[in-house]
Figure 1 (cartoon, rainbow, N blue to C red):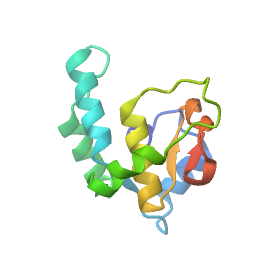
Figure 2: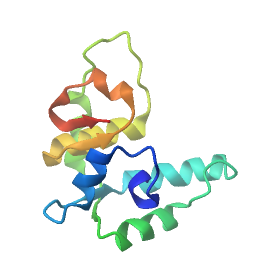
Figure 3: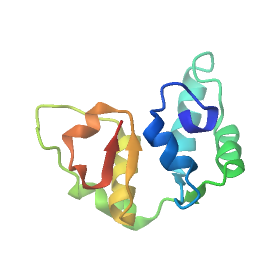
Figure 4: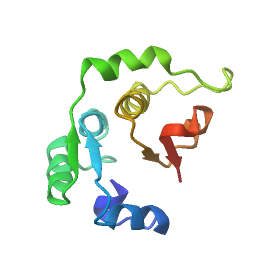
Length: 124
């Protein structure tokens, strides 16, 4: 979402990756789904709907990746490096499973992802 609204939190090196025409940028169906759940729960805090997010992604030329059984089946292979660090967000785990299944790199600012293999992650 930071890339779509040109948020100052987005690091320049990540912004450069996203705007580079040689890179294909994907977004998961999971992201608008999570946004919609948060929007329903706290509309004053999450002011964008799933439809708005999807439209912004499409306008930016991002490519949608729907969820499939291969992504879901990857979930049982995701294990934290340190079992004492809890990261119980099912949306985040699905995004990671999808990235692993598709052999893609997931870009995130969530430092809890550091507790997983860095093969499919770029934590900024």
